Image (cartoon, rainbow, N blue to C red; front, side, top):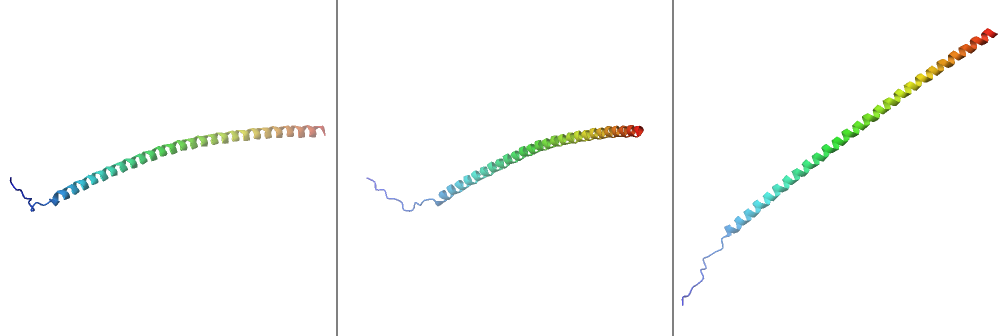
Length: 107
């Protein structure tokens, strides 16, 4: 039988562990980069929401313009009513003048 003795000179290679750690760290960095890209996408999505909100504001502004047009129309109606009142006042003045004229003729 052959006797085999263990070789005490064999050591564990520490560099292998270090390389594995570097690989793990590189992987972590890639994951972090992906997270940053995902955050950028979220920001873009938020920007799209802001654009949509801006469009909503424009739509609301259009509604305000329509309301302003309604107010202008109401003001035009008021002016027309004022003209009617003035015409009515003129009619009363003419009737009063006729009555005064008739009274003065009969007196």
